Amino acid sequence: MSCEKAPEFHPAYPVEVTFERMLDLDHAATTPLCDAARAAMDPFLTANAESRYGNPSGTHLLARDAVRALDEARETVAAAVGARPSEVVFTSGGTEADNHAITGGMPPRSAPAICSAVEHHAVLDPTLLLGGSTTPVDRLGRVLTDELAARLADRRAQGIVTGVVSVMTANNELGTVNSLEPVAAVIRQEAPDALLHTDAVQAAAWLSLPRHVAAADLVSVSAHKIGGPKGVGALIVRDPVKLAPLLLGGSQERGRRGGTNNVAGIVGFAAAFSATVSDLESNSAKVSTMRNQLADELVSSVDGVRETVGPDVAQSLGLRSGRGHLLAGHCHLLVDGVGSEELLLLLEGRGVCASAASSCASGALGASHVLEAVGAVPQGAAALRLTLGPELDSDDLRRITGAFSDAVGRARSQL
Ligand code: PLP
Image 1: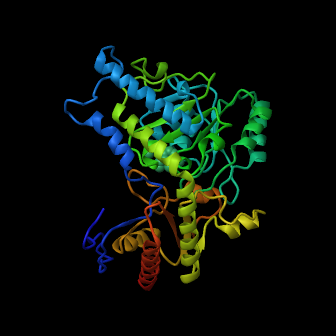
Image 2: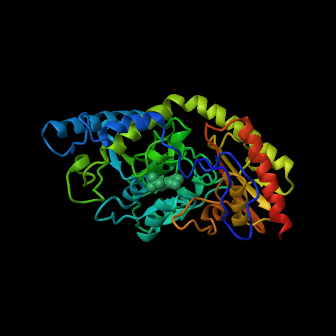
Image 3: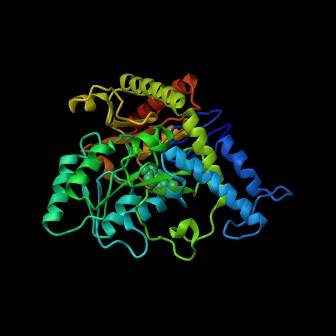
């Protein structure tokens, strides 16, 4: 986005600062469509002699061309996640993939799910709606495996079968990464019939999924968090897991999802995933270095600012990895003496887009269940999520630091 003068967003905070371009520090909400995805999608979207607009459910030449495109995309997505092509079920995004994994399709599984207390609402809501429950996390947001084991054992003692255990690969608000092998070991011990689902929607941009999600039976991914288009994703359903379709009305996706495939979107998803995997190491190294600089600078240059799950919290739990427990782009801060909404508006007026929690449909800044679960509900403080992307540079970091200190000073002066 580019604009010459910031628009006025809120009468209480007249915007005085002009800026050349908005700095996007909300990459966890979404990412711009990458060039590779746009180029790959183009033939499927453009009406000309070369247009590839066929419906892959048909049998003629145009249809077979679309089937070929889907097959190629399926192979690419499978390789990026460490799965077989036959295990990929394309969906309308992360939300559908999560809903599908938790419900088990239509009709829903009778065995309830259990999920970590910091899951995205796409996992949490269907879990609770269908009579499931949550299991606690530590101060960083990592699932407590002893607590999970106790809950599964308790259910078993009561004769309750657990259908699925869902633990996200990395949290969308805090950026904290979970290790799935110990979770899988607990399931093998306490609920051997339960499936392990992981929401890898945020992790896909920064972690090598074949390594990080190998222990999971079901894996959710979403295109728009990795430079692909919105409204496309996938649920990996590992052989020999059987899953009823969530959407009925067609035999697409080997009977696991009815409905005509979003061919252009899927092709863009695959191209974006491939580019993400190619650049994963260099982007992670670059962005985590910038994130570390930014976090250090913001905490040291402005009083009353602390990292919610930073190195000091990690150290208090015996970790010596600095910010090694976090995704590369995440920096979550608590800012004393400021309201979240005011701070976001003041930052926006200074050309910086950020978030207070996960973006929700209404844009409202409700209390975050994630901060509650990690015991970090801000009292008289703003919660601020900054999520960086690889297009930022050191000049941008300087601008962000300036905007942040200015915005915090302005908000505090108005209290
Ligand atoms: N899961 C996580 C962890 C997310 O961060 C999001 C999006 O914010 C979703 C699921 C939902 O994905 P989508 O926007 O593709 O429906």
